[in-house]
Length: 501
Ligand code: ADP
Ligand code: MG
Image (cartoon, rainbow, N blue to C red):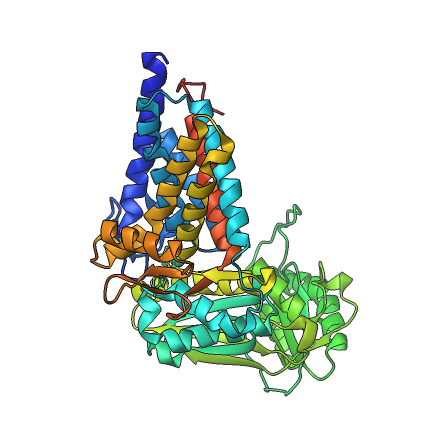
């Protein structure tokens, strides 16, 4: 290999390792938090790998590829980003020795590709398919070590409740965070909660009011007609004339659709006069409702969002619609009356401060995501790095099958897999080498669910410790980490190019 090629490769590897080292100390339930500060002094305190990587100011292309792999992990599995990053860093770090021994990058890539395939196949064979009794454990595993941990019983129960209600569809679960109160005041609401107020509230709290959703606004478009007026009286009468002309029809149409009053949710802004006219008909209006909230309400009501007033052809009944105050914010809640197919659930999170609440929300996102993942894929494995450990044992026993020098790469892959339980143990203050040696022994004896005992040191059954995670998460972590490492190893030169514009 030429010197230039070696330099490009080792620079990429070094950058990837640096990224892995940044998040290493946050892995596992005893992982530490990172305080991230930007130029303006804004602070985030987090333990979440995805958040740390998103916030890092990264310029090196090799490092960016690792961050991309972690992003894929986050998008597909909602969790496991730190694991993916550490695994990729370790896979690349281990190549250095292979290169020193004279292995060509292509041989290493071949070995890594085979090892990833075998590892995933092996872990597939140690999954549990009856997930129902373990969903809470899956949620708990995702949140241990996060800010939520002190309320893990309640948090995992809330997550499982929300996922069960939404039948595993994460799009039907939304989270509303409001500072003030404590985490124990959090609850799972059956329906949708919007961070909104009604314009001129004429709410009568009907038990099942009629609701319409409009994907536009009820305000005057800027028309290009120029009107010259010479005094205030003329202007006022023109305005009255224009407003009346444009709005009367629309107000009448809505009022006809909602004869007993009701609620209109609009995507865009609504003219005050229109709101006042509708309010006379006992109709409340909420304006500038975000598209995602409109969509969630459409699912909840089992209807579609009308493009404009002209497209409206009926109203839909909703459960109680209520405007209420929580902390210092106004909210509107729409209860779910349909249940079944249209279930939409909102988790209302309370917490002392905005900062703790942000971290709480990130923890909830991870936990909700992994519970949905387990719910949908119906496969889970024991956590704590035990599945990686067991796959490593299997890889070593099969390394010779591939023949030639590639078997050395298989062994390097096995070592990288072991870094997951090793790091979990190290972050809990225990010796990583002793833990790995002990774990190898346990796994050799058939104790395939053994992982690090983070509380007492040594090793322990992960099934006994109720540590479970979705199989998909482990599979994706191994695949993303090996793919990104292979991509990086295949790069032999970094060349400047014209910028895209
Ligand atoms: P990631 O970003 O990869 O999800 P985390 O910091 O959330 O990183 O750590 C996840 C790892 O911690 C998983 O391998 C999980 O199985 C492990 N883990 C969670 N709880 C325990 C526990 N009580 N004992 C040992 N390992 C645990
Ligand atoms: Mg996690």
